[in-house]
Amino acid sequence: MTYSSHAYDFTDKRAGYEQLAAQLQGLLAGEPDPIANAANTAALIFEVLPEVSWAGFYFLRGGELVVGPFQGKPACVRIALGRGVCGAAAARRETIVVPDVNAFPGHIACDSASQSEVVVPLIAADRLVGVLDLDSTRIARFDEADARGLERLAALFVVASRLGELR
Ligand code: SME
Image 1 (cartoon, rainbow, N blue to C red):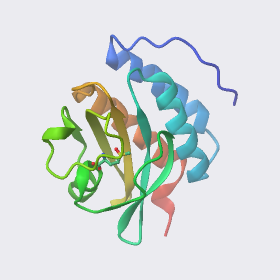
Image 2: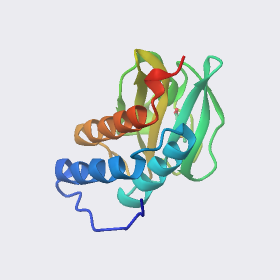
Image 3: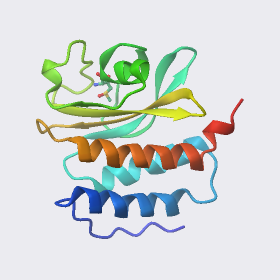
Image 4: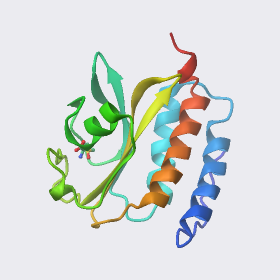
């Protein structure tokens, strides 16, 4: 599939994420490789979503989160479960929206310019496989509409990459 950039209007976030989900589904269709799919998912999100300074994956490896494909500045490599926003979302298996990272106890500052963050856990067949993490240099960049939209994109990534079928 060929990627063609087209205009997205995120003034209506629901409609914007609807379009983005359709495009991601096309981008991942027929490709099960998780690294390839994570790379393209991060690239599409970073390309399309406004005011995002980092978008990418951490995968659970040997009991901790290890950075995977992403777009943005080089990032912290390993995050223990329960540490930072990523580790908290992974441990709780819940999406966490952080309007002000400086007010989040234990936030890990990979980029000191980051002001807000959203982290979506990746769950496949009831197992935690990692997280999808987005940062912004704008305070309160992410809201519940972003959380729901990104959960949908994360689910498309998990299904396309057949992560629920891994043993
Ligand atoms: N800020 C994150 C660490 C990952 S980076 O933002 C890419 C955290 O507190 O978990």
